[in-house]
Length: 524
Image 1: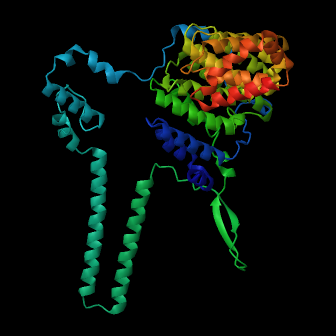
Image 2: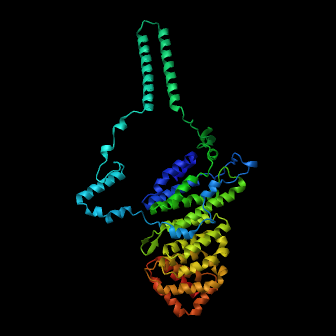
Image 3: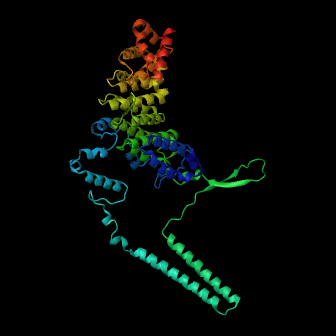
């Protein structure tokens, strides 16, 4: 919050603040990256909406503005993108580069003695700290740290030193003259006249020196300010006027979207070999696009009539990069009995934010690419595809009827997947839309309920999908649709209901709660 206040009071420091936060987005600490993401949110929340003043480019006829061919060529588009090539030839994104484990398999390292290994690691540490230069493995590199060339004075520096020396010499001579004049038998008026002459000469010399230093440098541009009346406590009659930076003038001094450079760097970091860097970048993108994504891609050379088209081009480029991360990211960790994929999960959240701003046609193209990923043989890719499906359905509730029938086969296949984590995400994806399934997919609800009841036979305390499947089943049973209850009654209570008993003593409280709600729903 304090960083946000800094941005609010000093809008011209936006890029400096984002640059400082970037360092913490790549931290090894989870808490630091989350805090950095919150700082980005606070900064973005205090940045005014991008409303550039239209400035036609030179040479444009009738003042019409068209995006340059170079800008369009730099953006990815659905027409030229092929997800299958990314899957076939892309470099997998793992936990790290693996450099920290390379020594264990190095034959030269294995032959080193204990003392040699200690020296080797000491040398590596010094190089990482920047204390020595690159050189041989066991060389300190300090022999060449400073040589004779470092002590040579260049002609420019020598000229500057000689000029400064002459000025100091003239000032010294003038000072001596003043001292000498003071010692002569002159009148008081003559002494004061000599002192004024010496001060005038010193002031002129100082002004000439400042002009030489500033020669060739652009004049510093002071930020515009606006006057505001500061409220006083109590019933004071004083009126205090303060000058604060004018936020409107910030847009007059830039041509591009304020977050253009920052987002470009974050999108590049999405493909870093280090997972912490990818996670931090996705966290920052989620906050920026959520608050300012509706003006992304717009420049001062974009006419108001082309705002929507340019914004959609930028959003398409963003969503394609996120889909590439879905295809390439293979990092996953396990906490208790649940798989944790922080990069894919956060990128799925970013995808949900992006598709919320996209046109219906572009959302349809995203659905097509998610279906391609859902058919991939690697479980990480299927896992990421269903995560994207989950956030897409949650973000675009207005398009349930249009795209849920297309996504339905991949979700059902996910519920039958051999990987338990994929089944968990598939069940979670349907929970937000469970109340409307009997309206949109009335003929398919029966199949879904049968799959969920049969899944209970293969679940145990160690299955990561237990919570999601029981929760979805409970939601369907408690919905207003009579279909799920008819399926339960038609199949026989004595056969289906006992499948819930083992989960009443489950270690996870949410599983026990969902199971109890399911039993109460059946009793009603």
